[in-house]
Length: 437
Ligand SMILES: *Cc1c(COP(=O)(O)O)cnc(C)c1O
Image 1 (cartoon, rainbow, N blue to C red):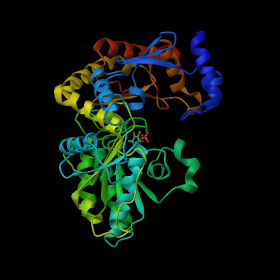
Image 2 (image 1 turned 180 degrees about the vertical axis):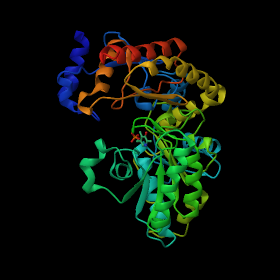
Image 3 (image 1 turned 180 degrees about the horizontal axis):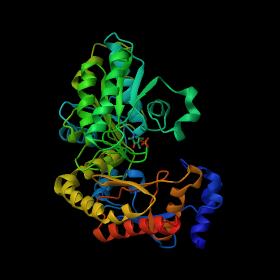
Image 4 (image 1 turned 60 degrees about the horizontal axis):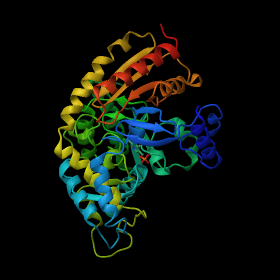
């Protein structure tokens, strides 16, 4: 590693404790100090370029230093940087909320601002519990899918099912039950999983406030994918048994799955939808909980300290973040992003055919602008993902496999040539680093 990068890394390691990291790994694994970004590229302090094939943890939609987004944020910066959202309001929050109501499934008519994904999940769980309480029912249990991920704060962690993140904190968690996620993308698997869902609801619906799921793609659970039929069935069953449906579209929202929202594939309207990540184009922390008039009205009454939703965060609805989100939505309005993405995802799929000939490739799956290659035959301690990550960095691509699942989730502005590079590096990684015949 070059001197400038090394210097930066050493200064970092003196004081920064990084997220989701065993810090001792950095005794041998170099940190990548990023100086700047442009388009799909990140640049380090020596001018090395890396294709950001994971959209900086799934947030970036239209590239780094996007001019349209930059311009809008700069204008907002000179107008109003922040104001509390209780008792006060501002134009970016108002305009954004209207736009979100217009583009999300009908029935989602109210927007509650939060400031990150996990907190949006927390707010949705609390709202659902509180809704039932306001109607005279105490339902303190939540239902979620096996292999799910909804964030890292205590409530969000409780409804998730990635053992690596959750197990240690088991004694701290809130009441949660899990039903099996459909085992693959087939309709049969979806129908089979719906049978298990109905069994649990039949038995436990009196105690369950809400069923939360990641529609179509379980992100942190290794890009596991399932059929929209499951969403249709889950909507019918949750209505039938008086349980809320929370669609956590924090990762899937804003075109990632091929449609604007994953729920659009099933044409369902959940009781709550959580959005974050792509919401601001990957610029600033912001999230929302969208919900229905029915939920909103259950809290609406003359002042009674037990009935109102007294939940807040200091940076709720930050104007700069809202303006980044407005600029992001404008890009969708002014371009055929979903149409272009459809072509790109097809191109990615066609280019992955040679991977299926490799002996350690178990499955290749795709949903819109998410493509995953699952490897098999490795133990967790072999850390094959880490090996591929390290190799790809030397080749100028940022891949960040989840265990033994290599995936591509690039910014939508990636060019066909950059797609070629991204895929070629992953291929060479699998073949050379893992010495696969
Ligand atoms: C990332 C993610 C979260 C958590 O969002 P943070 O902003 O990282 O707290 C929740 N749900 C899903 C589906 C996610 O992908």
